[in-house]
Length: 68
Image (tube, rainbow, N blue to C red):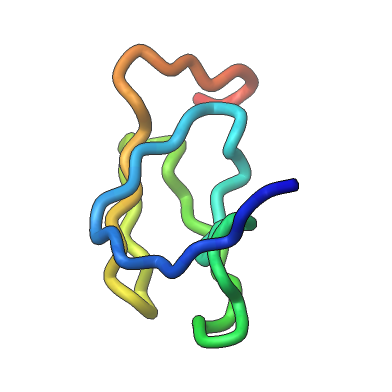
């Protein structure tokens, strides 16, 4: 069972398995969050959530298959 947690981090590293990326992520508590928004991390390797300001970064060395 996945334990849900508050989104208190301002920078979160993600991997290719986390794509398509959206904020809040599945392991974050949703009741006090914002609407789900999909974030385009594939091109630049990072994406900023327009609602909460969390910066998501692709882990170093991650390979995204099928995306250019």
